[in-house]
Amino acid sequence: MNEEKSFRGILVVDDDATNLRMLQEILSSQYKVYAAPSGERAMAFLGKRKPDLILLDVEMPGMNGYQVIRSLKENPETASIPVLFLTAQEGRDKEETALQLGAVDYILKPITAGVVLARVNLHMELEVYRKRLEMLVEQKTEQLRNTQDSILDILANVTGWRDSGTGGHITRTTAYSRLVVDCLMEKNHPNYRINPQYGEHIVKTSKLHDIGKVAISDSILLKPGRLSPEEFDEMKKHTTFGARMIDDAMADLGDVSPFLHVAREIVISHHEWWDGSGYPNALSGGKIPISGRVMAISDIYDSLTSERPYKDAMSHQEAMSILYKETGAHLDPLLIDLLHDTFPIFEEITVAQQ
Image (tube, rainbow, N blue to C red):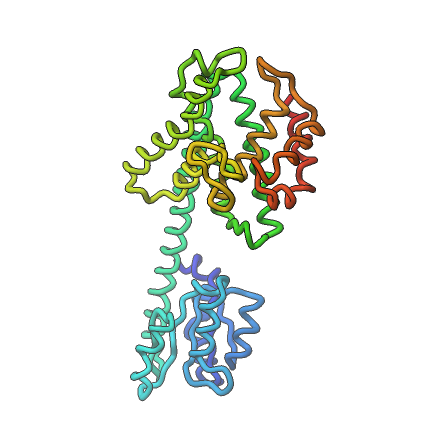
């Protein structure tokens, strides 16, 4: 145990030189001890190194202990460091304030070696346990994430097996969606606020955009030529079929999954048109979720540049000509404008996948 402690560091902050020396003597046999004679010096130290625990005096000239802990808790890099306040006997009325500010404990002055070591050892062990628990949670979260990704691939492949052209379509549209999301996050336009979690959900659930096609009959889904108006009306139902599948999953989970919410957005809205003439709900403009608008661009571009039984594949230039022509009618004009410098990379993906 002592060998493990020797690698752990404690920052002692006190304007009283005698207290600093005493605490160093008490703790140095088991821990690496750093001393700071003021709040300002402590903050300067914390800008360079992060100890495992801080002993912090309350009453100090200049930056006092309360000000120091407020700064610590406002900084994500130091917010989790346990802080034990050092307070004089007559300052016990301030204990509640210290704990409200985030301190984990307090030690009364005058200090005694037994009390200091007992409190420090306790909170050091709690910190070790907390870090191990965090690591375990991270590992479990990563396992869950990998399982989720595998299930997504399985579900996407279900559609691919029924429609020979869909497998490559899913791979490419996922890559296009990644480009669009990365572009929007980089440019950070006020109309397209995408945080990393939402962006990642868009990319991953884009694989499910056509999942509802599993409910479409083979005579329509696998028809080698163009669909009749009646057949096309039936094909349109893949959006609502897919949404119902996700609704069932959300009902089982209690409707608490942001991931499934984004999946549903994409499934139900990727055929909505900017001018309101799309399906299934005739949404228009900003009423179409950003995820659906992102998927629409990826889906249309790939449909244009891919070979189908009833048409040849278009070149990148031909496809872009149609995309720009559909801007304002089918597609979000501002989104298309923001992606101007990203579209050439679409072509690189298309060529690489051929």
